[in-house]
Length: 169
Image (tube, rainbow, N blue to C red):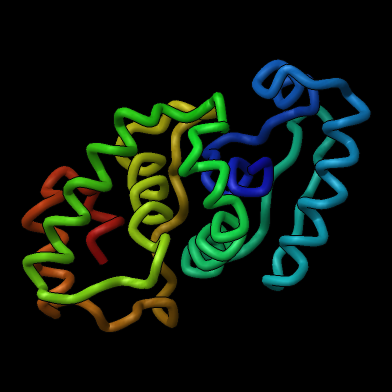
């Protein structure tokens, strides 16, 4: 969960902020940060610490989102049981309902758990309440996925008109 927080957080966070957020000891956070580094390295990313600023992740937008989805897939049981105390589950449920409408409109079925992960990601984009706002860099030219104009893209824009322009790419 700490890795996902680092992936969606706009600002750099220090150990004390993580301790306060998760109500755990410094040693627990330090151990978790080692795990986060390993998880991010699997995605070709890094966790960087800067004196006086705190921790932040490296990697492009698509890389960060892919890592977020992959890491959260291992924590779906926590999401389903609502065991991550820092999350606003009512808001996530609203995003999930909207995504389910998209799924029905497209007459498709997404992989088990994907909509819940997407709902959490959308919530972090639309109403960030964890640690700082989500403000990832715009897509680089080579990161565009070519999804603009597809039925899925059109449906998402229809159901999520408040998505920032940078997220509509």
